[in-house]
Image (tube, rainbow, N blue to C red; front, side, top):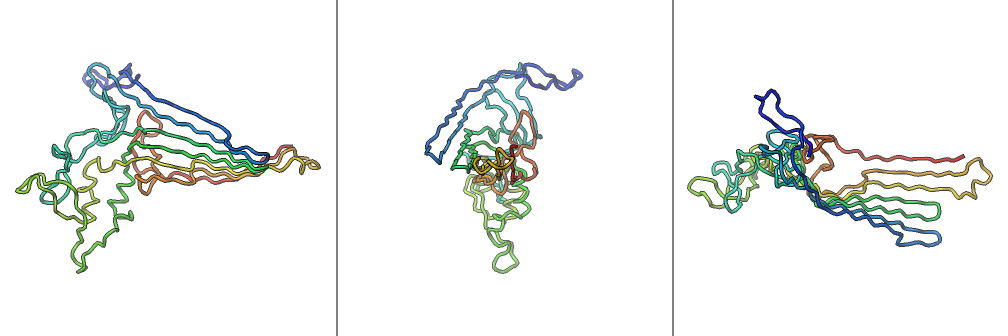
Length: 309
C-alpha cells in the first residue's frame, strides 16, 4: 500500500508517501448469462454478476499504529493492522462487561466513551447486479437491478432530521401528556445504571422524544450515527420500440427507434431511513463510510429518438 503516513512534526514535515504496509484481498466474482426463454417473437436474456471479497490490512510501516484516511477526530476512517480496509472509528456508548449500555442515573441517557474505537465497517458483505432484456418483436425492455448486502455508514443527514424533530418517527408519541402541560416521556434506553445506589440495575428512567433523539441521547456518541446500507434498487430501466424495416421501405430512413429510459427509479434500504445510502462525504478517495449533509441523489427520466438515414 503506497500511502501518506504520519511522522513527527519536529522533523519539519507531518507526513510523507511510502510503501506503508501490506494489504491482502481474497474473494470471488461470478458472472453468468443466458437466454431462459426464446421463441419466434419473444426472448428473455438474463445476466447476473456476484462479487464478494474481503481486504485485510496485514501490516503497516514500522512505528505506525494506524493511517488516517479521512474524517475528523470522531468519526474518521483509518487503517489498522489486522482490520478490514477502511474501518469507521469514533466514540461509542459506554458498556459493562456483559455488553449492557451504561445509563446515567440522573438523566436516564447513555454515557459516551472518551476514547475513539471501531464503530462500523463500510465494506459490504456482497454486491450483485442482475440484467434482464425482454424483447417482443420490435419492443425491447431492459431492466438493471442492483443489490448490496451489508456495509455501515455514519449518517449526519438521518441524525439531523431526527434530532430536529422533523422525521416521522419523532412524532410517534404526543409531545405533552394528557394534562397538555407535562412533557411526555415515552422512551427508555435499554441498559443498566452506571453509578449510584442502583448501579448495575436495569434502567427504568423514562425520557422525552427530545432527549431520546437529542445530542445528549442517541447522538451523544458517534456510534448512534451508524446505519446499515443494505439496499435493493432498480438502477436502470429502458423501453424502446423499433419500427419494422418493411414499414420504412418507401421512406428515406433505414432505422427508426423511439425509447424512454429512467435511472434510480426505485430504492428499498430497510435499515437506512429517509435517505439514499449511496453517498460519500469524502468523495472520490481511498475512504468511504461517512455522510455529512449530502444532497439527494437524482432520479433521471428521459426520452430518445434514433434515426438512421
